[in-house]
Length: 144
Image 1: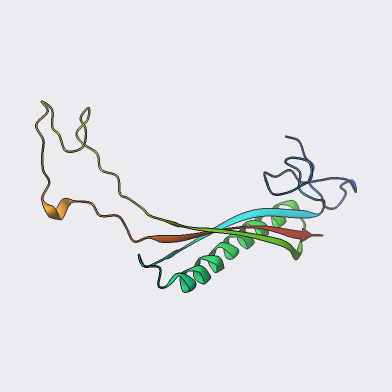
Image 2: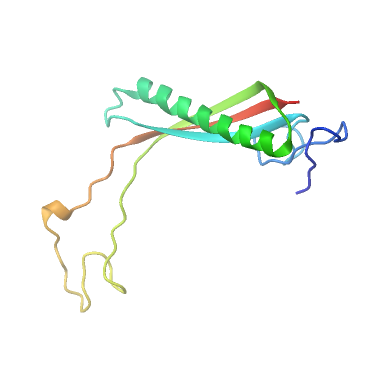
């Protein structure tokens, strides 16, 4: 994929290459004079979803802050300034984190060499972590 950075001294038809599947223009090419980034944020959510609205706000704020930090780094590295937000796309979903368990080398978890099954004490049984609400934002920033 080839692209040229827009900015001082760049041709007026220059574009920034990026992987943004929602853009209707040529594949892999951002509109002129833009930086497009994706930020991610997470927040704990109760299993019954009773705090979903609060978790959504928290995760969204974190995702937007992540996107802005990335855009600022790109702008600084390329010598341009961010002028405005052109568009924002938001997706969210609930995730669960499960710690990994491993058996002895060459054996399945819960067995020892020779095939003897081992039953761990109740305190050693791994429970999933609290569910998380994950929000992803794709932000197109106008640059100059």
